[in-house]
Length: 440
Image (cartoon, rainbow, N blue to C red; front, side, top):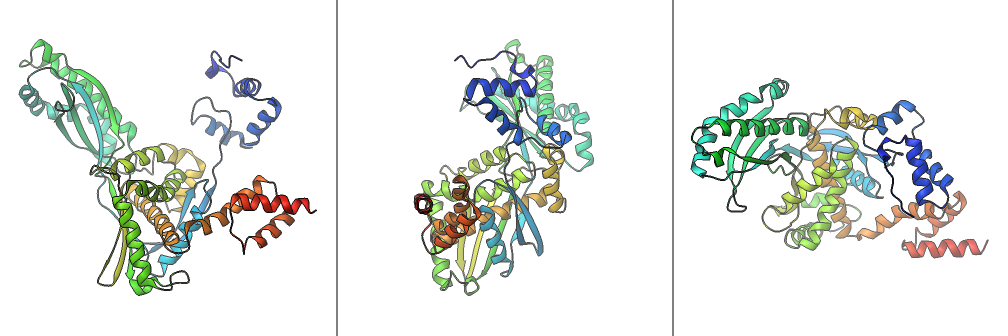
């Protein structure tokens, strides 16, 4: 079978599905039916989804859940979370309720600076290039005034442009390193438009610069693009309380718990193998809110993991300490988010999620996202240092196993009753289901 096709993008959605079903499936009608079952019954909404990306054939649903009872900076909120992993929303909700009686979460935006770069090759006198840049910097700003006009009205725009010499890393390599404030938009299109104008200005002004030789005038722009690494667009989230206030059913000895919790965080700070899984738990919370609000979780992931490695070794994003009888747990992460533009205003559920958060600014959304990450991390570490992570997770996963085996309501009642007093594992549940059904 060849499995190649010409002009696929020009086919209608029905034709695309027909080709895929015939080429890759033993039962084409069943494959077609599966795809169409996930189409939205509202043609207008389905058309909107079809146009988000290219070659759309269906919708891939991810559950949208809600974690209530988040007390953040003295105000209660319910946080939307789009995620397919069981126990994440439950864990965040439990952590929110736990800290709501212990002072809640405190969140602070530290900075909102975003970055873009024009990467170029210059073969010539570095001192002449530095002089050229100093004399031309104002021209770069002036040439983007039409692009930045609306952003400047909202209080944002270009913060600074710096010439960076990177020839010690790559021969003849320089950058225009540009910082931006894009207010409530993530700003990717805005930043990239500014950068492309900078590149154009750079080439034009170099050609006209009298001090450059002919070789120096022929500057080569390699690319102009924003960076998803935003170490100066950061937010901090924190919880703290007296050690004795940590007491609850699973924490009968709060002092021992606090010490073990801090040790668990310290291990993630110095051991990359642990830090990766530790931070993955944080991203369970962060990604779920980022996705629910129509932001780019891939950009967030890339930037955050780079931030976790900024000192030369991959380390924990969160930290904990005990000082003067006070337990404190916090994280600081870079988050370039938007509440206007992109999918935030196009996707109906993104609009719903943002409205549920009372239409936050980008800075307020940064706080919600960071708090969700911290809550998720606290819940995971509390389980790891007390009952163990699998107890709660596998009980939540039990539903997935029951769905996999298409258990009836009667079977579900009996199986859940059995596993209230037995350890849940995939093999144990499968064995119990099979034995139960054999006895019928």
